[in-house]
Length: 148
Ligand code: HEC
Image 1 (cartoon, helix red, strand yellow):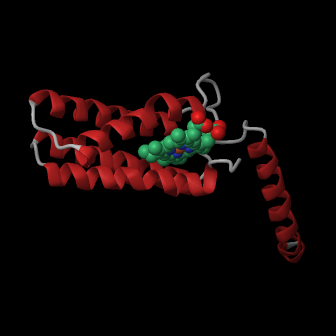
Image 2 (tube, rainbow, N blue to C red):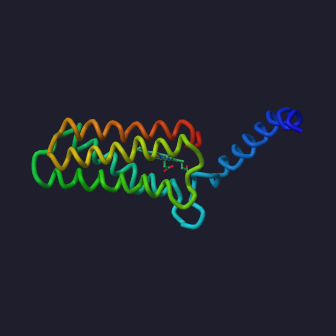
Image 3 (cartoon, protein in one colour):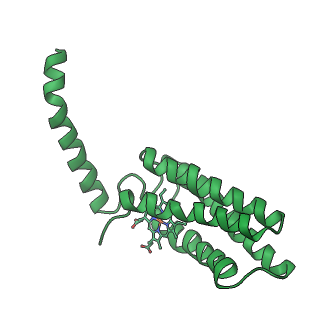
C-alpha cells in the first residue's frame, strides 16, 4: 500500500498543480477571493493596498514628512496596509505558506515597524518598515498574481 501511494504521489501532485492552475486562470482560485465575503483580492489591491503603498512612497521617499499632518497621513496609510494583511489572511483567502509569510512576516510586521517609527517621528525606522512591507508585494505576486 505504501509502495502504491508513493508511486501515485507524483501523478497526484501533477494533477493537483493542473487543477490549481486552472482555478487561477479563471480568476476564482484560492487567494483571488475569500469564501464568504464579496470583495475580491483584485479590489483590495486596487482600492487599498496600491494607493496606500503609493502614498507611503510619496510621503517617505519622494518627499520627507515635516508637519504633523504629514505624519498623520503616513500613519493612516501604514495602518490600512496593516489591516489589509489581516483581510488577506481571513475568510479562507490564504492558499499557502508563501501567501501567509508575505502577509504576516513582511506586510504586517513591516507596517507595524513603520507605525512605530511614525509614532517616534523617526524617518529611518519608518523607511525600514516601509521597505519590509514593500517586499511582500513581490514575495506574494511572484507566486500568486496571475501573469496576463
Ligand atoms: C499575500 C499576497 C499578496 C500580497 C502581500 C500583495 N498582493 Fe497584490 N495581488 C495579489 C493577488 C493574488 C493579485 C491578483 C488578483 C487578481 O488578479 O484577481 C494581486 C494584484 C495586485 C495588483 C493588480 C490589481 C488589478 O487591478 O488587477 C496590484 C496593483 C497589486 N496587487 C499591488 C500590490 C502591492 C503594491 C503590494 C505590496 C504592498 C501587494 N499587492 C501585495 C496578492 C498579493
